[in-house]
Structures are given as structure tokens and as C-alpha cells.
Length: 349
Image 1 (cartoon, one colour):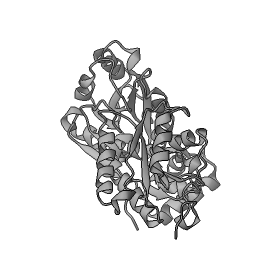
Image 2 (cartoon, rainbow, N blue to C red; image 1 turned 60 degrees about the vertical axis):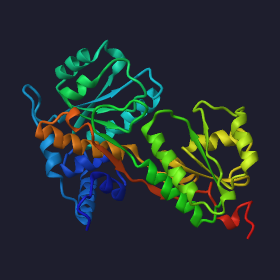
Image 3 (tube, one colour; image 1 turned 30 degrees about the vertical axis):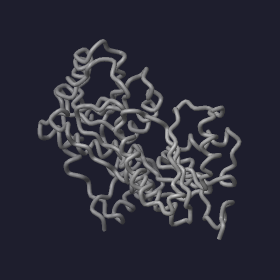
């Protein structure tokens, strides 16, 4: 039996929410007795054991706080930056996870403060002990002081890289795994269509993996040059259409489902004209429809909580661990956008 069973595993098996699992395992009477017994039975079956280190943080106290309150963690984002909507979506999902694990997640918008010192004072007043940085493309002012003051981690990284540990998806492995899967299914002319994020660490990883895969494509005539497009590209983008017409890929590998939506808006039929897969299948509602590498940002957040746990207990701040990057694997999920090659339009067998 694996020794790393989490509340998320129990929630998945028992068919209830994370918050319900958390309450049931604490025997909280707010949850129906039948539900508590059901969850506890699944926990026992899976071999769940509470993480002692996690419990240390959950039980932590501050002067003047109620004894049943958990640890305050600030979620810092740029409310007017290019990733503002992404960050707001993350916050809603991260907060549910934090609640289930006994933490209190507090959203803080960088734009609400004139400088880092004002934000630090505000967080201190709220009893914040640790910080989670969201995806930030550029900072409105210098914020390294936050990483010096608090235990801090960043979930993913954009063009701006903070001075603290980064928990991110393994972009290189995502390309490698998906490429191998496409080859196994019989696809030979793989066209990669990516949104262009200049000076992005994750983009460097993706391009590095593509170059490695291209090097091994045989015959050389099957090497389809990758195509980068602006993230705001619309159906009138001539570059994408010219690229498809010239190189005739039998499958397009995109960033996420937005590329498939874009291609459909241009009039292409998927999978009739060409198949489609993604390296970033983050929307669970699209699993089964779109084939790709599923990656859950909540998993990154929860891994980050464990690291913050260690940092708080050892008195370490974000800057002291600033050279750490932890990469997390995803998993492949089949979908109707990617039929077996024998069923595809371009099959020549």
C-alpha cells in the first residue's frame, strides 16, 4: 500500500469533496454520520495516515487567535496583469484545497498596495506566516522583501521569476511523453502549435523538448517546424493557416484546449482534417473530448504547502530556498480529438 495517500485520494474514491473528507476524518458532526462512516472506511481501506508534519502547521497557534483556526497563508497575485483571470481561477480552487487541509488562504492583490513594505505590514496584521505567489508576468514594484520576510513559494513561473522556490509542471517531460504517445498511435507528421511567451522559463523547457524530439524524427521530411503564435490570435491569423497548408501535419500538438478552439474557429474539422492533442489539459470537463497530458495546478499548490510547512518549522524564508525548482509530472488521458491513426483521414497503411 502506498504511503503517500492524501485527502484528495480519499475524496476521489469516496465521491465527496475535499472539505467533506477533512470534516469526516475529524468526526465533525456537521457532516452526516453515514457520510463520516463512509469516508472513514475508504480512508482505512486506502491505508491513509495523517502527515505528522502537516499536522504541526494545522495545530500552530498565534497569540489572540481562536484555538481552532489554522495557518494563514497569503495568495499574492497581480490583479491587473496579463494573468489576472488565471490567478483568480486558481485562488478559488486553491482555497477549497486549503480549507480541506486546515489552512486559511487570503488573497492579496499587489496593485492594492504602493510597495512591498505596505503589503508586508498588512499581511503581518492578518497573522500571515507563509506566502504563495501566483503566476506573475511582471511586477508593479520590487517584491523580494516579501520573500525575505516570509516562507514563500511560487506556483508555476512566467516571464518574471521570483526569489523563492518554484513548484511547476515538468514541461520538458510533457512534450516527451505526448510525443511518444503520438508515435505509438501511428502519427508521423507532428506539428507543434504553441503560444509565444518570450523569456519564459517554461517556454524554454518546451522548446528544448521539441528540438530533442525533432532530432530523432525519421525520415527528415516528416519534421514539421513548430509554429509560435500570439496568445490573442483570432481566426483571421494567416500565419497558422499558411503553416498548416504548407506542412500538412496529421496531428497538431497545442498548448491547451484554446488552440483547438482557435483551429475550429478557422473552419478546420478535428479530427477529420487532422487530429489534436495538448500538453496542458487542465480543464477536467474536457477530459475524454480532448486528448492530452493532464496537469492539475491544485497538485502544485498542495506540494507547495508541504514545502512551506518545512520552511516555517525550520525558520527558513523564501529567499533562502530561492534556487529550488520542483517539477511535477502529469498523466496522459485519451480523447476523441485523437483517434488511432488507422481511423484518421491521412492513414496510408
